[in-house]
Image 1: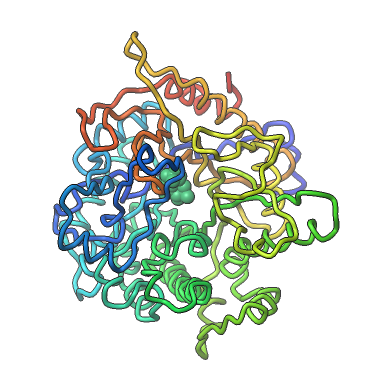
Image 2: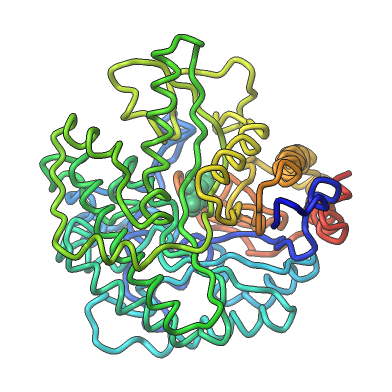
Length: 493
Ligand code: BG6
């Protein structure tokens, strides 16, 4: 977008805007032991019933070494919903046809590392795994839908956790580069939009989810999170470099879970804390977009006794692997204040300080569409790179009405408000490439392993225990989003 171009102020969404939906392999595919796939970290996320534990936001995607041992040797009576997902592995044709009916011109999905390298250690990839994604991308191409592919979305071969304690070990950099080169080469004619790692900043919240690390095996979790992040920065940069060599005109992005942090009061100390909390998340795209560590982290590492093992030549790798665009998931904003634990809370889904001006979802996530506009403006000011809203959506309980339909006006309202604010940001001059709503079809929740926390335009007949017909039913929001896309974001009614 050119600054001299006044059209964006009048029109909002550019003609080439990418509209679609987003998913992740471990939350949709199922078939966890089919097609030669190895066990992955997400196959070990056990469902813990919130009605028994009493916590709506019961975070299930954390695993200790003891739990892992139990899940492998004695998994009776334990549910692992990510193992069955929504059976996309067998139903991808039907699902992609429904996305096409809504008019998607982009579909965000991820490749499961363990489907391509079952343990991560093989020299040769698993042909059956590669062939599966060939079929999926060909199906997208049939409808003129661009795949936006995340190389690593919260999963990796479990062998790499067992052998190396995940990204704590530098060995993973080379293993990931091997995997990235294989998929880049294989899909070079089918995929031009890539994201290296999903929400890398979430390493700070869950070492297991983002980095495959069993937290009970490390002495200092903060140190481990940053060391793992350093390894992922290198892996991401090497993957970006490989993509540029292999695919002409490729576009590779980084991604964070953007939680805009507001100060609780106008007290300068609270304002300063909000700036610092935002920095802790922006640190990630700072490294990936600028190709170097920002100086504010030197002070943060020193204050927190973090000593990173950074080898000679790492700076060069980071410089050579800068991304083309910055993508975010956006679900909520946060409130912060000057307090001891403020930096620990930065980026966490659970803030103890409530924003009295915001309503909450059924899972207590604050709803703040204006926060999306603020985030987009600030990110664009900071990077001057195209932005992609790679996730945004409402997790809610849906019910089938007596007329057999799902009337999810609450979801329509949520998305409408966010799309409106995104449009305002574009009119403010921000270059947004595309928007993929999270969980365009109901899928297994990352955080709680429930399917009853539904995000989709398409209902999947399944309960949290995996019982149901797997039948797909378009919700009211399906027909609404179809009109949104057909009007390029002009008709939001
Ligand atoms: C994002 C993740 O953080 O949030 C997704 O990238 C996830 O994988 C989404 O599903 C929503 O979170 P949840 O816990 O409601 O599934």
